[in-house]
Length: 178
Image (cartoon, rainbow, N blue to C red; front, top):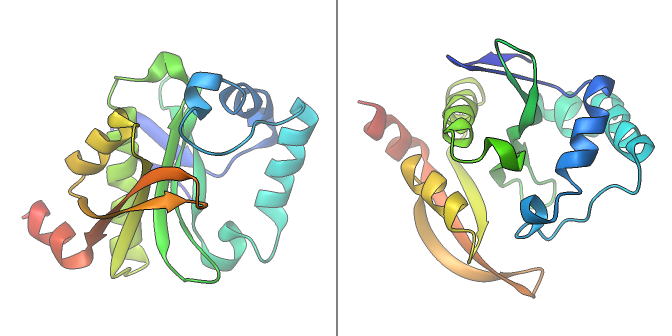
């Protein structure tokens, strides 16, 4: 799976991304609204990548989708990740993205997400894709709205964190492209 935009290359993680992924997921500002915890070590990031690539029940092998490393097309620098994934129990497909803090505000999240949405709606024929965004993550809310997502409802993430449930239907996606 390889996706490309004007500036970006999106592809499955490689072991060479482990140190950068460790750094990304251990930046308190990056992680502030995710509800996730960082890796204890670069070795743990490597273990995660190996499982992500090789697990037959994982997103890549089972669904041919998942969170993808986002690289600068010219330099090969790891910028973050972006992708869609299908949740096993609900079969809801969501989009997620996370970028190194030094690359915020450069339009990478929007650019990568546009390509990922195209992949979801055109290749996978998804009827809708959703985005869960923390109530106070205004940057991600702006990205979701630029992409054409509409606020469906508010909820408590894991019963604790205030979140927004954004939705983009296939019809709305195609309508906004024309």
